[in-house]
Figure 1 (cartoon, rainbow, N blue to C red):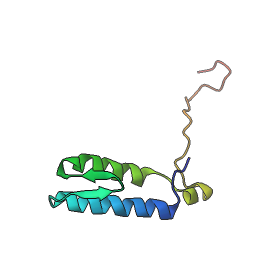
Figure 2: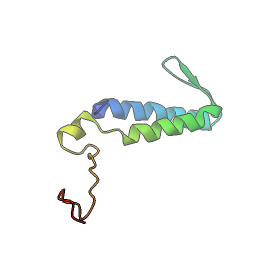
Figure 3: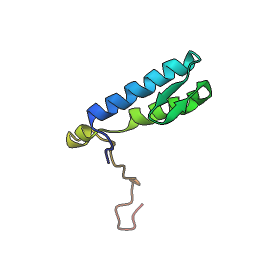
Figure 4: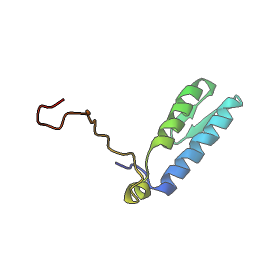
Length: 82
């Protein structure tokens, strides 16, 4: 299920990319009430990875969201055959 629209996701990624650049340069950065420092770089990177993996509402409407996987076992047609 999508959490963001494409516009919201883009704004989030821009904010976290700015935080990454500022913290990598040794500065502090604030997003809302959160203060991020150089020690928070792994958290910033994992948040960016998570954001990039999230489908948008528009992706889901277009059928481009993460597919649902069904495990298929070859040779098991439900009749006890192998």
